[in-house]
Image (cartoon, rainbow, N blue to C red; front, side, top):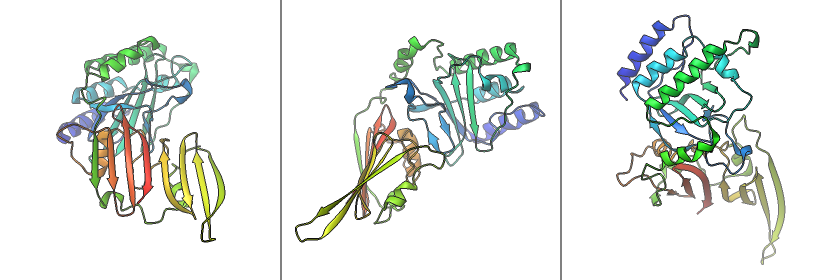
Length: 323
């Protein structure tokens, strides 16, 4: 998408919405629409937002679809009078399936929109923030219903399906599987130092705990054992478990290996579970591979090896091991 075209759209919309509501309220270079919350083990594993303040939805699927200039024009007109009603929702349930992430020219997320067409509710995030009013006394139901209907049409015009019943989830997956690389099985091995230069030769428990996002409520549990070596020396073996699956193993407070499954743990180079393989490539400064995106990326540096495992083009496991 050309930057000039987007700036024109934003400029026109700023004038048209003078005194009204503008979404997004930040400058962006391009935006991608994703599907998420489709392949859940349990309803409790649902993500409420496609992206918020550094954390990606773990259930996000695929590399996303770049949205057209017309989409941005139409959505800003649809939201021009405000979205307080849709932010409150037209029903008590909320399980968004469609999510949009807006990116800067540096490929950093600057805003997001999460949509539940089943429950007629949306959730927005912006690095500049928004404030909404839960004014049920002046709830404009007709306006809200028209907005969500218009929004569904705008999304459908981008050739992304919109369904309003949970029984149609398999249809979303069929749409994603039209992409031949959606279930690709390939491995890329890269010997690097630059991408791992944020990892020092020693990683302690304090360092790895600092990778947890500041807003996360991820609980941790620590166990410590002593190991006596054949020469009579003693090593301290420490295991730090975060959440249900993420675990870090240390000997004498030196990380030996770890496996990360939680999306609120962000590595020093900015990589985290929930990112698409395309987003990881851009974060590492790589161009799109001609042979298609891999399902495994193996990075080997001076001190560490990282294995990034993807499912449905989404990073779902990070393995760290000392060399």
